[in-house]
Image (cartoon, rainbow, N blue to C red; front, side, top):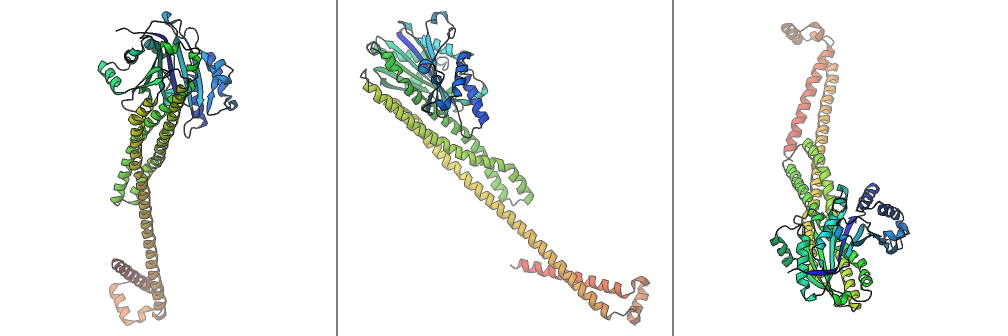
Length: 489
């Protein structure tokens, strides 16, 4: 069955990192330039560049409507002629609404067509218009990819048949996501499994979330919210202004939700890298157990010192991302609760967004937090292993150094004993050996038999020879005693 809708609005909320933990001034400037490239109009880029230089003038540094600093009415910039290229979409109106929210940039790009009997596939056509090359949020530079936190699509329309809202929403979803999910079975699977329904100002709100398959790239995250309003609500006086007053909190809510998913993706990257480094820690432990030489220990430590340092830093970063998820979940909850409260006070119709909040908690953040906490607890053991390993290596080095020092001291002692005994012997010999040793009949006979040269037959030479023999004897005797005593300790 073909459904027709009226007053179609496509809102794209997308977010970029403004300042990451430990960012240098150069990196922050690169992020700023990447953010500016999200806008296809040179005049808008120039105005935003000027506004970014006046950040400190903003009354609330936590939430800055950038174009208000550039003196634009409503802090928005209307899309220029030619932005939408299809001739039959020339009546499309829209605007950019860029903001700063603490450490991120946020942008709302809205396109609307205030006509009746609009084919449902116009949502997909508008998506194609903003997704074409030249709209850099969808074809970004590498630095833009690095800084992209995520996006949310809010698709709104009016119907004369509110009882068919679910069928209309399913048709919108199938058309809109067909460029991402090619298989009808996949489309049906996510519709049945990941669909959550709520109410807002009398509209049926259907949220469909298609999470990244490998949790490696936030670009693969598809978060779609469809709001179908009954004619009776849409005809309310000043309804457009009332609806517009809520965009601030939709922006905040979607920002915190996307930051949660972005943080979770960072933890998956950290876990992969930490697991590799954990294996290196175990390798180093096995090496120590193999009783290596000091040279082997030194070479191994030189190879491992950088991964070990990175391991400690990344464990802390893992914990920081866990805390980011908790903080953003609390902020997301507060913004959804505020939308609930303020929506109910308008008396325009039922408002109940709690199912969206509960679904995300049960199927997302509670699972993420449990998983990250488990990863953190198990991988934190690596820090203790590094400490133990370094203390063990330090002990080995000190012990072996001490052994070297003791061996050197023993060598000095042995030499000292040898020299001392030699000196004593030389003195003693000099006192009783006659100047002419041949005066001893026995010695004279031996010299004659051995034919010893005459220059060697004198008191100094004899004294030196005997002192060397005595010194060597006592040095060897001392060495033997030290080795014997060492074995019996």
